[in-house]
Figure 1 (cartoon, rainbow, N blue to C red):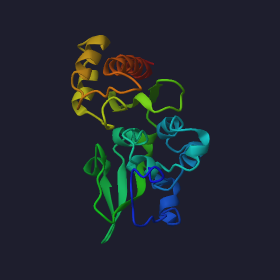
Figure 2 (cartoon, rainbow, N blue to C red):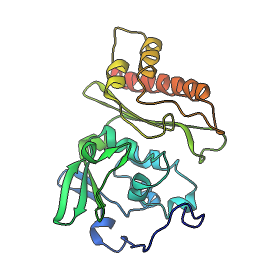
Figure 3 (cartoon, one colour):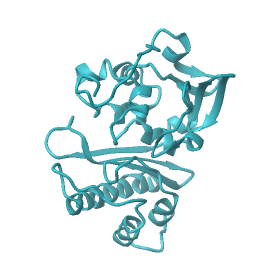
Length: 238
């Protein structure tokens, strides 16, 4: 975006040399992912299978070797697909602030986008090891190739018999909607009824652009949610 003169800055600071930003592994029962860890390194180490799987669909292989997890979450695109697994697994974020490091819930600082004050930056993501190993579904629907921007991107897990879902590509921001989750869990309704009601609870207008109309995105979302319910509820039944 800077090369295209879409954004301007007086200075650029490279955070990749900060040791904490490059950490990747399991510590004290939590998966620790530094914000400067590349998507390729994350996928190869695979400490968080859903996040690894979901990240493999972001850009091409060469780009994933340079794109970082933190960069995707804090980036300027509206998709920010790497955030979806973090939202449904209640990940904690380590934020560098003027008074030092502070660990907060992702839900306290991510609302449509990562909301930090000037001078603050994301250092690490901390996810409970048990949550990182939950049964999951990762689906992405694109217009052409698998590495295109998503028309619909869905990440979901099943925790204690309760489905959690986060979505990108449908609205102009990634989201996890509690009302939609409650509807999708309602076993008194058929899957088709659950999906229809959940879609009526979307948190914003459906995107309609050159890549896909709003009607087409809804169609793909219906398919993705049907696949998600089938796979995760089948996991519980088995």
